[in-house]
Figure (cartoon, one colour):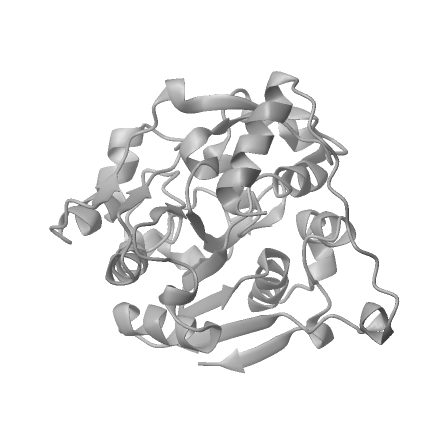
Length: 305
């Protein structure tokens, strides 16, 4: 099933339409018992963030593995806070710019960048540096968009355990390639905010209510918001007083980027940058238990790019 078919089905489910149940072929030979290949995760380090993004993507086949000519692409960073790049609360603008540039070079017809911010959106977009980074590309195909409330659509979460229905930003669903570009940082409630939690930026409604069962809720959302690629920005990691931060003493610069097609594996590895284990993060555990990715570090193939 391709992504557009998936989106059509999601919208039909939300409208209450009845869909035929697809038939699957059951393997009866030895292939059925073969263990799945370990997910590949690339870790790159360097001070040139444009080169850093390219190097992180290379072991995964490059951006052309994810973006095809003519694709509509969403690049979803964290732009939630009225903070500057050195404070580590948002995705670094140079990382976002490099990801968008790579998508354009792969032939994207349009690249949308957006986030439902927590602080006032104009200030977040401006002070994060991300808005100017997209403008500086000087390419009409690259658009940083302020959230349009009319674009939130109700989606049934069929596999959800904590959430059964929520409003999701339509562009996050109805695109050819969704690329998740979170920042790695401390969070007062969830311990860390990484890739799975970055999904909250495409949620409508009262997002705060999901904090009652945050880990499972984020895993539920991951069943309907499925990035083709996750790139975790750990160029600056916020070690304390997250998610908003503000004090430079809480920030450590490590110039690191993590890339994987497995969002759970990406979050699992990123936890170790904070001296934590994957099992310490409830959303990682819940998503793994739902079969959305691998959290066991010894079952993830890590390559230094």
